Length: 99
Image (spheres, rainbow, N blue to C red):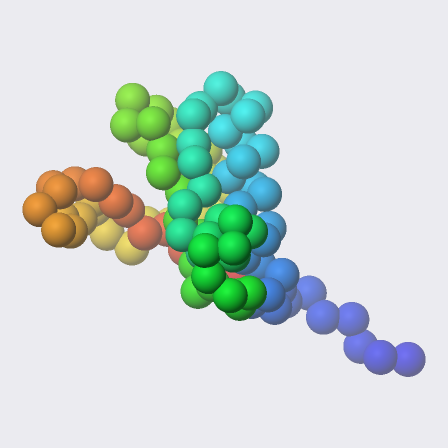
């Protein structure tokens, strides 16, 4: 009998990350949009591949709530909101130690 692994493989974790954020957003009435990664593959914008992360655009008025909902499920911030391409405080990177 093969041993059972409790670790998520990357190819499993990414789709589940999108599903988790979509579920939480729907449950709490938060507007989100999946961008880049799997969304581009789904729409044929790029060839099939497993992306490196989950990119979600969140309604700015619900950003703190969405981060809080994920934090309650074990997700941690890798730092404060960052500035990219002249957009101050537009993104945050979250990770889960068990993912």
